[in-house]
Image (cartoon, rainbow, N blue to C red):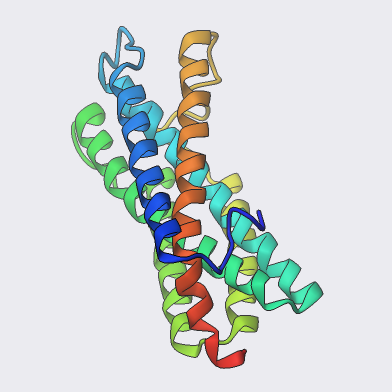
Length: 216
């Protein structure tokens, strides 16, 4: 992670990072368009798989932000607070784009938005809480606060989602069956989305560093 989330990069190198993000986005788009179909969902399965991969990447981003925050509290090295901040912003971005995708899939597959579905209501609530945390951290510009909030929220998110029941949403839509091709495609999308997540965090690192520039 030190090389990938370096806080010191020249402008030309950031341009390469942006190009890399564009390439990764293109690969995700191609992989999605060439994804498998299914008898019941038809071509909508492709977006369902992307949606599932994006959710797990968001959860992973929150977890990484939390771990980086804990490492900062243990080591007091400012670079870990910068990494936690960049990863926290990235996780919020992923979650903010996952929610509209979830709305679209509900309308497409269920014929409307089921507001009482726990797998929709709880993530929406968590998004609101994290948005408030990130705004507070940005305004305070205090690494100890941001690192603590990221660590605390990561624990809250994983605990809440692990305890959330479902009504219409299947418990394990991909690995609950034995469709190896669908599962393999889901893994591929998850890896590509994970790469994109790390690229976004890398691009945000210089901004995170400037947030704490008054401490150096």
